[in-house]
Image (cartoon, rainbow, N blue to C red; front, top):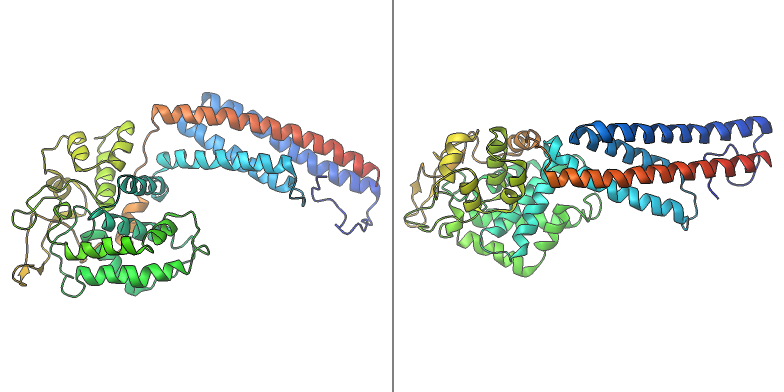
Length: 403
């Protein structure tokens, strides 16, 4: 039996209101739900048939939210309420798909969640190697900063200097002499990450950090001894791993950099999208791709990404930082390396300013087809929900008249 805010208590004690008032109250409550659902169904037909892809997506998301709210009100206390549970599961599934697709058009931090998940999965796909361990470290820092407020985290301000070094000087293509090198060398940064930050975050999973989050997945990844060793080796190979230097280094890493860190991808993608240099169909290839994909799609020569970053992307310039030369131990400077202007590192607020202003993009043809497919399913669910509401209205009216 479905109970919808009946005007008598669950313990069976009847209300002191006259039966006519009780009947009218129930009728008004369910009629209101039926009318609202009919309006949503009518609006859905109009908006998804004539609107732009973005407008259609927004209309479908609004309908999905309405459906969740109705099912929540209709859900009885009986956990075996098969109709409610089935509707709720279907609505939740389509709602998540719509949110994911809509994120691309919204831009800002919302679009980064699917992007970072794609990056993480692409790294894992062929086995993690070398600076890819640092790329995963970067993904965790970005995800933490994006969700700090949502999860109610209180990240210690002393972490900022470590976050800043990880996001500017660690990861594929980002190794360089840096002014914090002597105070916070690679070994210290990585030890702090593995043996201070990771254990602390582990104690906050699943509450407030959700199990399904990218942060939780990466904490689990770095809880494995083999992966800890992989990241520790990055500190030993900081100056010699060829994938550490976007422009290469004749002395330290003569081979070309083959891959890019998440931070580099985010900055280059944001700039290229704003300049109209890439199409919607090319995004996935770039999110999951390597340095050669970016060079090809941006029309650059081999090894030209570093110069592109320093010349075209806001916030980056040739390095004027200093670090310890691994051969002599003396300070060195080199303008071949990209350097984020301002503080020594990309500090959290500077990074969040970039992430929150990340541009959206148009949907691809495949995504538009998926929105249309989901739209048909959402419309069908809306009609099912409306039919169910009317049955419940008849049932509740009959019951109310017999009180």
